[in-house]
Image (cartoon, rainbow, N blue to C red; front, side, top):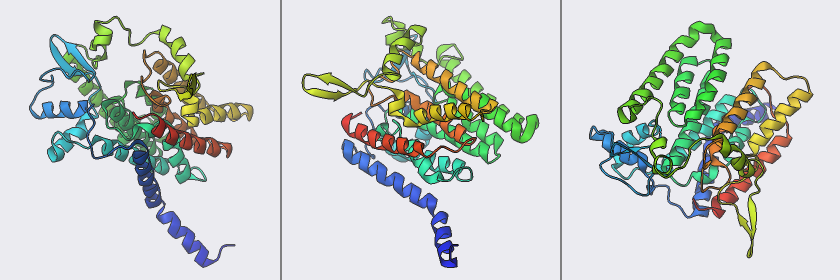
Length: 388
């Protein structure tokens, strides 16, 4: 039995656990900034969203001219940002403070820290070690090596990660409407995140029936309508965000998504090793390797699923979560580059929240923590070995 004093100390520690978790995030980011010799207040040269935000302030959508180092869509002689628009919204607000010098690297780190805190909130009443699990879930994966650069690709990736985790956390607290709206915003960062929708809708239906789903569905459809209108104004196609009008796909003969890409990408992102042999010895694979080595939480997720089948405790909802993960993985593998220059498999950070959803149904077994801790160490190494 704990004494009253010991109980008070434990209660005091738990009371400030969020603060300790935030301090851990700050220290981790400081360490990775040192490893990469990066400055979080320095804007990225790949500041596509800032350029777009400054155009919005002038009432324009098209950019004034080409920026050859950026991935811009070219349509009817105009240059457009080829990425979904939601990440521009917080940047737009920040331009009124920082102008064209928005500290986008610091911004993605803030996104990541908020995601960690929300993951903790989603887990704290469901598993034994919620703070440790949330920290390892978020940073024991190849999200970590991209948090030192506010480039356009990483802003979209990290904000989508934050919004998806926020949607899961809010749904777990019974806040169905805001959950579905946050989910819709995540799709405006990474379109394949639409696959989380049926899982959240089913969870919301179990909590409150069809009536409580309606407001959130309406808000989500409003967001979708806004994306469609924005796409139509630019490309006369409500489903076209702009990637198909990148020169590499529109004039140079490349195909953005194809079944043929799956086999090639699987060789790298399913079976690929993180090192390759050169005359000088082993070198880090700088164009990706197995998503399970880069993101051990996804390996754990597969092990949890198999273990639940063996233990005969599989449910329809657990099977649906895993099926959505498999489909999401296949869709990402169908992309021509799967992320290009990177440490690990950064596109598959989009799939990490499936593991969080699964943990709402089943607590991870202890082996998972060892694998996740190894993932944290490995991705710290990646932050040093591959300067993004």
